[in-house]
Amino acid sequence: MAIKLVTTVAELRAEGALLLGLKQGTSQGLVPTMGALHEGHAALARAAVEQNDVVVATIFVNPLQFGDAVDLDRYPRTLDADLALLEEQGVDLVFAPSVEEVYPGGQPLVRVTSGQLGEKWEGASRPGHFDGALTVVAKLLHYGLPAAGLPAAPGGLPAYRAYFGQKDAQQLALVRRMVADLNFPVDIVGVPTVRAADGLALSSRNRFLSDDEREAALVLSRALRLLEQRATAREPLDVESASALVESQPLVALDYFEVVDPETLEPLAENCRETPFRGEALALIAAKVGPVRLIDNVPLSS
Ligand code: PAF
Image (tube, rainbow, N blue to C red; front, side, top):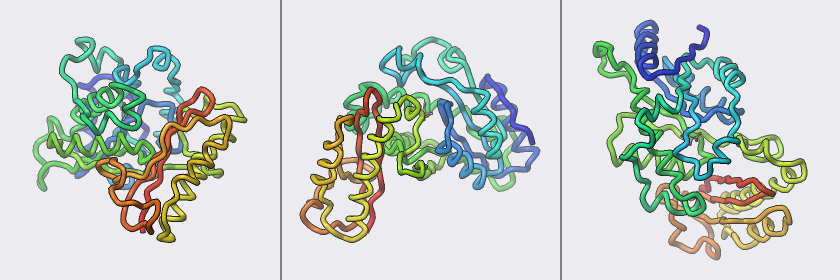
């Protein structure tokens, strides 16, 4: 079936319900994006298509999560290419609303606050970013609720899943926390980071790197890989040597590099720098490479 584009919430609900009815669907997947899609988004869409009868993707550049009007203006808008990529993965419906459709009264008075979890790491250098992101994710999850207007399916309400990349580890942790704390009826699925062959995590921002900066940026994934190898070998993590590797690269300004609990994102309580690593953790890194801020992470497990 050809992909369908809608721009209003009313159309989204009507078309979503129609598709579920037509396909006698028992599950719906939602893939929220800001467009400028790449292979990382394709992986989200593919996971959603594999696991659900009906899949809706959203494309909305959310002004609320940009601190800087220049960043917002410069965010790439590539709707035709995005639709082609989503269609190729088998997505059924795309919701690409205007700012007025999402925020009809202008800036919303009541918002989701991300609390302490949203103030650290990325939140420390982008104040208000996660409140803005969570507020729009809450709205998108509500818009995409399956079967609004359908008679109850024989087995109950259709399953509802939403897909987020593990690359944005803090966003994913916050969305999981919002859904748990505020009882949203949706399962959040984290999809592993997609990397270029040389290890660079795919990001819409990579297009702003010069060739030299792109080459320099590889040090982020190399440093993470060092920690991953140590964790797998159950050795002390030696974050200092991995940080020194990053800091040896003149085009890269390291912001943070830390091993944290995957849910709370608090630095690990036990000393994994001197004693062998055991358990589950996340290694988070952020750096400016030339003018571009990049983030990356790897799950650590042993
Ligand atoms: O990760 C993104 O692309 C955005 O933060 C999201 C989740 C679509 C909300 O605007």
